[in-house]
Image 1 (spheres, chains in turn green, red):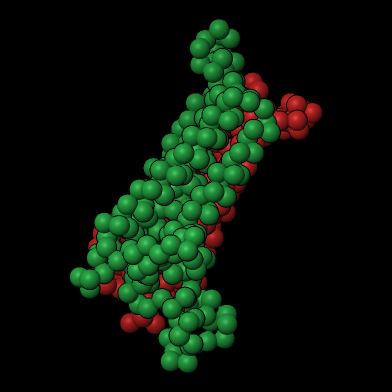
Image 2 (cartoon, one colour):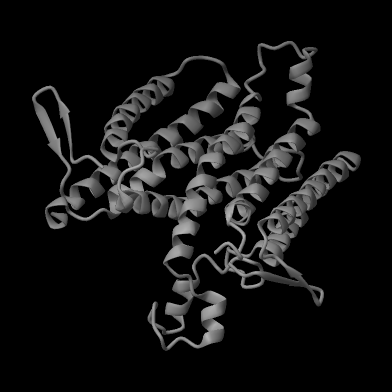
Amino acid sequence: MRTGLSLLGIRFEMDRRLHRRWLVVTAYVLIGILIAGEWLVAQRWPSWISLYVIFIVLFGTNFINDYLGGGRGSTQGLIKPFDGNETLRKFGYNVPSQDIPKYLKGKYMNDEWDLHRRNDAHWRAYRWLGLMIALPWAVAGMELPTADMPKSHWFSRYASSYEYHLLICCLLTALLCVYITLPQAILLWTEPDMEEQ
Amino acid sequence: MRTEYAIGNIRIRFESRARRRWFVALIYTVLLVYAVLAAFNLTQLSLNRQVTTTEWIVVGCGILFVALWIVFTWLAGDMRARGDEREVHRRDHAHWRAYYIVGYGVLAALFAGYFAGPNPITPLLPLVPRTFLVKLPQILLMATIWIYITLPQAILLWTEPDMEEAQ
């Protein structure tokens, strides 16, 4: 993991765990704002075009993740690419090897400790993922056949409404946003202060 | 990871990797058939709420899948149990591989959700495909949940070498 983050030419020191935790909180607040924006825009202008806001949210989350967290293929954030060793092998280097140039090593190479931490973070994230998939599935499952239900029933009206569809879309978008960022967030949250090491 | 499953006096041995791979292939084939039939049935159920022959086939397929799943989870062992260092490494690595595959299912459900809501394409379709498209996000999420439950174990069973070789 890197200890410094450069954003718009300003360098932020991230060697302390507390700073990294603040970064995680900030990233999730930004993602939360994006999802709330999706909900508000799509509710204010109810049409299928409004649902394209989903893509803006997903791209926004990916952008935040790439520039703050890193991990998934990005070399910008604090965490080196998870598959950095595979990338080095694609470049024709043997990993681990002494021949790898220093700048490539710093950018891509994950040592045994990094790989252990990466796998552990994904194991932890995976357990949360199940709960998160179950929620939109349960909500989508509520749209059961409503043939026996009187049309005046509140749920019968809601289940066929635009808001209900929007709710499922927003839940799925939120799930994908957390899915994209969660392993990196776990790593940033749990890694100890660099001085201690 | 366990190497055999016993039903009474019958012992099914899984030391060989090839045999484990066949078993993984079998369980996913049954799951695929089950998912396709269940999707078909869910669409039918939405159109008329009557128990049809398809429903009985779906139930049979579901029972077969659950039976295979019991053997499958027995072989893979408890994923939460902390074994030795190698086992923990293998388990975590399997989850790292599985994590990114599960995400595609959620993404597919999100795209399918487009057809469930107001859009210019769905109203032009006949009743049956239209109902199917409305139910598609739910079907995809259900399939994703099953993949989520089984995939790390499947990766372990698929990649672990022959037990004789390991010894």
